[in-house]
Length: 529
Figure (spheres, helix red, strand yellow):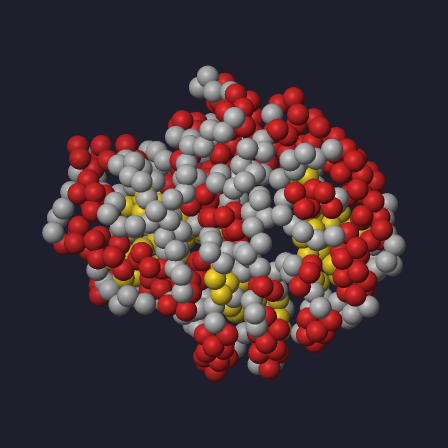
C-alpha cells in the first residue's frame, strides 16, 4: 500500500481560486518531478488558493473518445475534483511525446481541444471552461505546436510570476471581466505568452534561487517496505542551468544563467525536513549538481543526517577520489556519466571537452572504488558524425569492458540526438529526413551487434524502429511552428501513432522533409527573448 506524506487538502468553501496541477503522464513519473513538488508547495502557500494534482491512468486508448477508463481516474488526488471544475488547469510539460497525453486529458474532461472553440462557447453558449496554461522546459523551448490549444504559457521560471498572475485572475473572477480582458491583462506580465494575442514575451529568470525556498514539507510517496525509490526521496534542488553549454542541451540555453542554491539554504531545508518527518533518501536535483562549489559538503550533510543519497549524472572531470569516497560512503551503487560521443572530435564539437584518456582514467578509479555500476549516456546522429565515429564509440565501450567490471555493470544508454529549438544544434535534422533515417537505423544495428556479446555491458536501446520513429516525432514537435498545431490535434484524434502522424501530414499537404529542410536553412519560428 502506498501513502503520501505532506499532502495539502483544503476546504473549497474557504478558497477563492482553484488550480489543477497536471503532469501529463502516470503518477509515478509525476510524483518524481521536482517541478510538481515545487509548484504544489508554492501555490498552496497562498491561503485562498487550492492546488490539487491530476495524473493520467497507466493504460489509455487514443483518442479519449474511444477510451473506457472510468472518470474517477482523472479526478484530483486531494479532493476528487473533476478537471473541468477547476478555475485553472496548469500543465508541466517536459517531453514532446506527452503532447498526445495533454489532449487526451482535455478530451476526457469534456474540454474542447481548440482554444478558439472554447472561446466561442464561452461567448455564444455561456459555457465555462478552466484557463488552460502550460509551462516547463518544452513550453519555453517552443510553445508553437501547442499554440491553438493553450490559453497562456509561462516561459522560464514560474515562481516570480505566480503572485501577479493570481491577483489578475482573482480580479477577473471578482469583477466579472470578459475572458478577452483577462488575457490582455495577463499579456503585460513579463514571462507570459498569450497565443491569441501573439505578444512578444521575455523569458522570466529567477536570478537568486534562494528567494524561494526548496520546499521543506514536500510531497513524498511512501510504502510499508521502504526501498528508497526515487518517488520516496526528498528532493534538494542544487542548481539550475548548466555552465558548460553543450550545444544540444536545452538546460544550458533555455535556463541560463547557471545558478546555485546556497549551501545555507540547502542546510536549512534539509534540517527542517529531517526534524519533522521520515524519509529514506535525498535526491539531488540539477543539470550539473557537481558544479556546485560545495557539492562535496552537500553530500556530507546528507550523510550526517543518516540518509541515503542519489545523484544525477556527474561530469567526468568532476570525479575525484574524495567524491568517489563520499558517494561510496553513501552506499551509492551506480554512478552516471555522459560521454555523449565515442570520439574526441565529436565530443569537443558538441562542447563536451573531455578526452578519451580522462574517461578511461575515471572508469578505472570507479572500478577500484566501492561503486560497482556505471551508467553511461551516448548520442548518435550528431553533426558531422561519420562511420568512423561509430567505430570509435564501439571501440571505447569495448575498452571499458576490458576493465573487468561485473556482469552487466556497465549500463550503456544510446539515443538519437533530438534537436531542440534555440540551441546551437537546432538545425541538425539531417538524420531525420526520410532517406537518411536508414543511416541512423544501420548505425544502431551495428552498435547493437558489436556490443551485445560483451560480458560487463548491458545495452539499452530497445526496438530500433520504434526508437527512431519516436525521435522523429519528437523532432517535429520540438521544431514545429503554428501550422503543426492543427496537425497535432488531427494526429491525436486519429489515434496518435507514428503512422497516423505521417498520414495526417500528407492529408494536410505538409511534408516533413520539406519542413526539416527549412529548419536546416535557418528557419526559426520561435526565438527566446
